[in-house]
Image 1 (cartoon, rainbow, N blue to C red):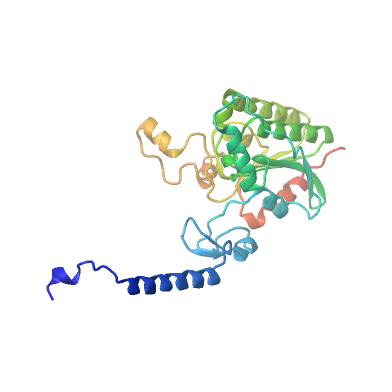
Image 2: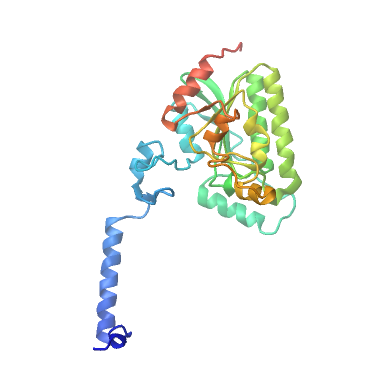
Length: 294
């Protein structure tokens, strides 16, 4: 048979089409049985499928390559605080649409439905090793953790209450920056949160930031870098503008691992990189080293 004829496409007969369809359905059924939806996650670094239970037991870290999965705020709170001590604050604060930005309200509703969160940050009070702390945890799932008026207001209120109660503040940052749909109102949150933290500092109280991947834009330029102690997770992206934007602006190649937490530690912007499994212990040690008069 000529080579051209060997690789020529052939039209399947009706009987062959039915047989192919039966085989396809059988494969789909087998795959559905073997890998139920939500049972595995694919690691974005090594590409391997990882059993969800293994991810949770390993502090949301890939057991194959060691890369970090992003942690949702409520899971983060459960990992860090003493069990049953968390009291959430301002959980029903509604996001408005101050600029009547096209499609913004629909996007907010969709995000609430998908993430089961009202906004990109959860704030409240809890305990670590029996010591009371005020905590704010940002989540990338909700509009990439962007900071709008509600995010800024919730963080500001949490810090102000911490100042009144003379408690330390811990903020886990995870954000793409200011929320563009809220324009200048979003940018105003940078000054508002920073002013509240200034008063907390003047009261002689402790503020700890934990930088997680990613911490960028207006969040980096405000409360993320104001901590008395700045911790970071391994490999976290931390910066204002992204590496590609900077390279295009200065027309130079940036150093390897630029804006990663290890790079920031070498250049004095971060005090310590802490592995996720050790984070609760490190926070407990720092808090216990600072005693406050109630």
